Structure formats: structure tokens, C-alpha cells
Amino acid sequence: MYYILLSIFFPILCGIFLLIRKEMEHRKNLLIVVGIIFLATFALTILALCLSGNEMFTLFNLSGRLPVLFKIDEISIVFVSMTLIIYICVGIYSFEYMKHEEKEKRYYGFYLIVLGILIALCFSGNLITFYLFYELLTINSVPLVIHNRSREAIMAGLKYIFYSLCGAYMVLFGLYFIERYGNTLTFSAGGVISASAMSEHGEILLVLAMLMLIGFGVKAGMFPMHAWLSTAHPAAPGPASAVLSAVIVKAGILAIVRVVYYIYGVSFLRGTWVQTVWMVLSLVTVFMGSMLAYREPVLKKRLAYSTVSQLSYILFGLAVMDAGSVTGGLLHVLSHGFIKAVLFLCAGAVIYMTGKTRVEQMRGIGKEMPFMMWCFTIASLGLIGIPPTGGFLSKWYLAQGALSSGICGFDWIGPVVLLISALLTAGYLLPITIQGFFPGENYDYGALQKKEPSLFMTIPVLILTVLSVFIGLFPEWLLNYLSQIIEKII
Image (cartoon, rainbow, N blue to C red; front, side):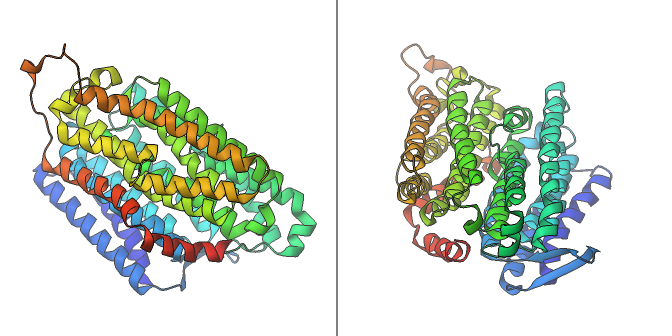
């Protein structure tokens, strides 16, 4: 069980060491140290997954009934696998991108601390442990947003903190009552709240469930607490935007999975007003995020609004509480993670090599940076939901799950909204590709220069692009694994 602690605290302590250590004389030494830490963290996490089994490990007790508890289960493996792959790929990408940024050591210090915290969230065995690290995630990810210390970045960071803390206090309010009425905060598939507590305190528990959904929904960008995303992403450096959109926001998704399926249980929430309100909010967010992305002229901000929309695909799938929809939601956790990392890394590469930040400036960019734009195009097709990408498969299961749920109105409204959002996604992503590769007769081909970045940036993008397609081409093993999870929680 000690491998769990090593996988969590090794990157955290290494990150703290980088923050307090004096600047290294040579940048190459810093990158070698960070690369070794990435490899060691990956190895320790794999060992934890292989050797720890389903046993619980208590680190210490906050009180007699509040242990800081760690446990690895099936859902932990899904989220930690995505986290490690994306985080390390983006970290390697950063070796080149951050070369022209100031305070590079500070960036890698907080980057490593956040990695350890994300692993801790995946391995949390109860809600109090999850909440502690969830708060630490907010505090330690802010420096990634405000790294360049511009006024825009600092205001974005403050907005991020304000929204996150408001959501966290909603969750904390729920924690007080769940511990009282449920008598435990330990995660258990199917829920832990007793039938007697449900019958005696059912109404207040439903109100608390709604508060916790909105509170954790802040990190996941769910309406009405979504506005921080579109501010924080454009202000952060390119690789920080990628992990923020692909990984860090998934902490909100994981939190909602834990609350709904491991604390409350489907049998308590299904058919209640909480489920109805949750589905309405998620569909509103899907449509609203797509519309805002369609109208946005700044590339990174357009991708940020896209994240708002796409995360609520996952939330809708979870809210329907059908086996098919939950399968689609969990599939979209992975496919969206790989796809959105690719899109932000490609956008970062364009900014890094050309300084262009607006969509109208992308004309002819496919001629200058063909590799990056091909990866951008493939990822765009995945986000739209074109086969054989993973995005198609996840959206197929989401639509099928909604149709088979039998929930009056939502069984057809859900698929319609998802389809409209897919068309809007095509509308705000494909024109970038078309104008990039087919700039028209007025384009100055004589001034064309190839501007592909180094292998540190291209190889991680290629790996993530391949994975986004691999999920769609060879889904059987993943679907079988997810079916084992869903059998336990529904």
C-alpha cells in the first residue's frame, strides 16, 4: 500500500523541492530532473495499481470518524490512466514551449505538485480525503493559470479561485449532513446512505445532492458556474491550458461520479427532481457552450467554450443514469481528454511558432505547419463525433443511452441537443482546417515558410492523436472494462 503514498507524495515533494531550490545553472539540467521525476512517478503509479489491490489504507485521522483514506478501485484506474498519459505528454511538450517563458522552474514545480494531487484524487477512498485534495488542486493550479503574471492572467486566476471556492463551500455544506445522516463518507459502489436515512431525511438529502452537484460542477464548467473556464484557458500558457482542459476539469467529473454513484446511489436519485434539474442544466450547458464557441474569434477561448460544452456531454450521460449513457460518459472522459489536449497543444504550437491567436489569422496555417494542422483536424473530427474516432463511439453510447432510458422528454431532447451541438462543433472547428489548408488564390505562397516545432512538441501531439483514434478503432477491451464498473454502480 505504500506505493500509493509514493505515487502521490513523490511528485508533490519533488515539486516543492524545485520551488525552494535556487535556479539551476543550466536549463538542460532542469529538464533532465523533471523528466526523471515524470518517469519515476509513472513507474510508482503503475506499481501502486498492480500491487495495492482493493485494500484501504488510512494515512491518519482528522478525527475519530474522518480518516484520510486511500483505496484503488476500477474508476480510479480509468481516471489515473488518463491523467498520467496526458500529463506526461504535455509535460514533455512543455520542455520546448516553456523555453521562452520566465520562471520556468516555478512552472515545473507547481506542475509536479498538481500531478501528485490529481493522483491523490483518483486514489481517494472517502469524500473527506477527496475534498481535502480537491481544495489543494484549486490552490496549486492557480499558479499555472497566472504564470506570465499579466493583468489578464491574474484576473483570470482570481476568477478561477472565486468560482472554485464558492463551489467548494457548497460541497462542504453537503459533507456535514451526509456524514451525519449517512454515518460514513467512505466510497462504496451503489451508495452508502441507508434506507432509513433516505426515508427520514430524504428531502434535505436531495437538496444537499443538488448543492454538491452544482459545487463540483464548477470545476466541470456546468452552467451557471462555467464562466471561469473561458477566462482562465486563454490566459494560461499553452501546455497549462491543455492540462486544465483535458485533465484538471475532470476532477469535477470524478467528484460527481463519486457523489452520485458511490455516496448517494442511483436508486435514491433516479426519478427525483434532482435528476431532472441536473439533466436540464447539462443540456443547457451543452448547447450554450457550443453556441459561444461558434461565435468566439479567439482560438484558445473558442476551445475553452468547447470544453464547457463537451464536459456537459459527460454530465448528461451520468445524469441519465442508464447503463448505456454512463458508458458513453466514461468513454467521453477518455476521448475528450486526448482530443482536447491535442487541440490545445496544436493551438499552443501555432502561437509559439507564429504568434497568431485569432481564428481569422489561421488562413494558410496548414501550409506552414502541416503536421500540427493534420493532428488538429483529426482531433476536430473526434470532437465532432466522426467515426472511427473515440468521440464517435462515446457520443453513440450517450445518444443510445438517452433513447433507451425512457425518461419522458429527455429520451429524445437529449439526442437532439447532442446532434445540434455536434453540428455547431463542426461549424467552429472545420473552417479552421479548411482555411488552413485551402487559403485561396490570394494567399502569398511565395512567402510560405515551414514552421513545424521540435520533436519535444510534435511527438506528444502525435501520441495523443493516435490514442484518440485508437479508442474508436479498438474499443472492445475498454467497453468490457467499463461494463464491469457499471454493473457495480447501477
